[in-house]
Every structure is written in C-alpha cells, then in structure tokens.
Image (tube, rainbow, N blue to C red; front, top):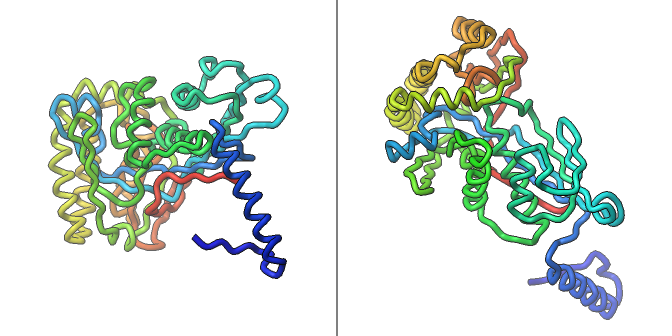
Length: 353
C-alpha cells in the first residue's frame, strides 16, 4: 500500500521518521482493549414498510414458519455519538451520561432508564461513556422502527469504540435479540429493514433465517413519497399485542406481498398502488386498535379523499406516528404537516472523528 504524506517537499528522512512515529502510535492504540477516540458517530436509516407488516411478527413466524415484507431505507436517520472524557464524569467519577429527550447521569449501566442504551451498553460491557441520541424525525411512536434504528446505530458505535468487527447482518441479528428483551412483539423487519440498505423484499423463515431480494426502484423514482405527521404518538406494545392475539387475520397479507412483488418487477405502477391500498385495508382488519384514535381516522379519511394522493397507509404498528403517501411528482397538496422522503442504498454507517 502506498503512502503519500502532505509534506512532500520535505526531506525523505523526515518523512520516514514521521511515518515510523505514526505507525508506532497506531500499534499502541490497536494493542489497547478500547479504541480511545475523541468522538464516534454512527447512523442508521429509518425503514419505510410498504407491504407485509405484521407477517414479521415473531409469534406469526413461529406459528406459520414464514413471513415476508417489502420495505426501503429512507433518507431519514437516527444518529448516535459516543465519547469519553479524559478527566471528568467518565474517567474521574466513573459515570455514564446519556442524552436524548432527557438527560441521565448514572454510575451503573443497570440504572439507565433508556431501554435502547441500557441493553446495548450491557451487552458490550461498555466502560463509562457519554452517549447522545438524535433523529431526523419524531422517534417516539413514529412507526418508522426508530428503536431498532437507534439500537443498530449504537451497536455500530460500540463496535468502533471497542475495535470489534461485525457484519451488517450480524448487527441486525443482535439488534433484534436485544430489542426483543424489552419489547417481545418487536418484528423481524425492524432491524433488518433499517440496517440493510435499499429497496428490498425480506423473507423470514424462522430459526433466524433471513433472505433479501433487492428490487428495482422505478416506483420510488417516478413518484413522490411523503410522510404525513398525525401529531399522535403512542406506545406500540398494546397495538402489537392486539395484533398478536389475531394471527389468523394476518395470513392474507402474505399473498398481497407476493402480488406486490410481481407488480414491482413488472413496473406495473397502477397494480402497485391498487395493492398498496388493499394491504392497508387488510392491515386495519387485523386489529381495531390500529385506527382507534379519532384523529387517525379523520386523517385516514382525508387522505383517501384527496385528489392528489394515489395511495396511502399508516406506518408501523398503527394508531399514531406517520402516514406514508404516494403522489405524482410535485403534486401533493397535504392538509397536514409532511416531509418528502426518498430511498437510500446505504444501511448502518459509523466513523470516528
């Protein structure tokens, strides 16, 4: 491997000395258990599920042996930073500082109230550090798998801090194992939909077997996709619990995923939008809790009546968060706050700065 130093006009002996010093410092750092860096930043997209939501429910997959979804990673992301001071709360007082919508200052990982941060730091036996969580969109009850996205970002950041290597698939698998410890209804699609980038069909076959098929993106390229905020946030567990109690009602969604898959490959946009609306109707039929909030019902009706919206559905478990809409390019006239989104090909990323 060639090395070009910025000071090319200096004496060769000076260059060689500098290279030797840099190499020795790198050797010292890599010999340590932890990679002490000023700051580590990791990010992970929020996933947008189009078809098959609820078939990835772990109880459904366990019972029927199969689930399948179609989703894409969006340009909206979660971000996690990890840093460790030289002489302060971390190194001197041996405290963990956790910053999100609130601030936590604790002496033991087990005392951390934020489930996402606690389970990840416990798993990696992390020393006292400062962790900050931020997001491009409202994350509480958004329906965009923000918890999974945060866990994946934090796992990636911990791996960089500890100088460990994990593949993206391994990170997603671990993320689901950790999240299900505090949310037993967490679907398989959440971590795999966030951490593995692109527009894809994901199949779940039990025993942690996961299959990806990356799909052509013309449907996403030729139309606008927006997230319409309902202003309603909720805990997804009651909704997911209700859906889990009605597993038989989920089965028709699998056939819709198959048909949508064919429509995407054939670039049949009209059939895609028809199936998209059918899938949303099927999803609502799996549990009355999905649209039990009157605000959700009103927005659902408003979007259905809109002349500029080709298709829409509520993201995630339901009863709050964001609606996803499709419209012709630059044609949407929403009555609620919205943000245009796009698909991205990258999944989880991380670096030291």
